[in-house]
Image 1 (cartoon, helix red, strand yellow):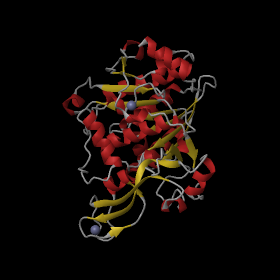
Image 2 (image 1 turned 45 degrees about the horizontal axis):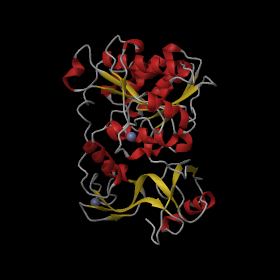
Image 3 (image 1 turned 180 degrees about the horizontal axis):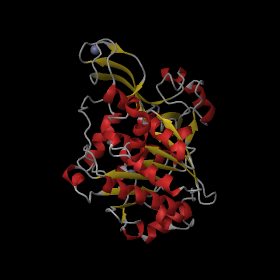
Length: 394
Ligand SMILES: [Zn+2]
Ligand SMILES: [Zn+2]
């Protein structure tokens, strides 16, 4: 491993925010876990934390309230009316009343937040229990070169014991460090990626893996995780730039009452078969909201051998399996599969993708669309990919 660290140090410039000693965080998942992490951070009143962008698409439900001090606080002052509001908005309102940092809410999935927005952050935290949301957060972290802390609480019967278990993983932005996808079994990786990215109709509903139960998690496991996350962030902000701990990825399993110095760190190794470590010579370009994608590509690419590679594929045309209606509304493929509905018969989850776009060149029909016409987020970015052409484009 020492060799790996040496190589890492040589190759990668330190992208860390140590010098400014200030931190802007994007937190995906405003449920019990996200709320507990934010609670710990507000208690700490850290001068170095300037802002939190809270991303969560869901509305607050009754079951969320018992697991979060902040939701209980909001419920006691506003009553039942908070149950019609998005979790991220309820939480950010409570935090802005009391915290030393500002908190903004984005009521959408993390994959629908533009990367120009995410890029302003210094670190991503993922407290979402949905496996696809966690993968989407991890992908944004890798693409933008941001460190990611991913937090999970173990499920099943364990949840009801006082000493429930939690897992906190730090993913270094280094290309040689393990990413979240590296840590998944190959079949699980294929299942997740195919749900988000392929055209095959093998799209059975996505279940949370057993380690991330759906049942109510106990406060001890959640609080142990939140405490350790806060300690990692504090340590991260005060580390010295040469500290190798933040150049590779590791996981800790804090038990209740455990603190970071006592929780052993398990080093994660990069998987050779993981597709998220390719060197991308083209880099990222910022997309302007009202500019045709072909124009943005033409302005940024050195020649016609370059294409815009979308972070996640977009479905341009889908057919309802229930009534046969064909819909031509650009929508992110994973969102279509998860919650896409038929505008004609109203049935959801039955839309069969018929045309999918994952990349585009200046000659393609989609080149005349703006990012939003292609179903992309506002203020987004895209990767440039060079097409190795022997007479035919890929
Ligand atoms: Zn990987
Ligand atoms: Zn239909």
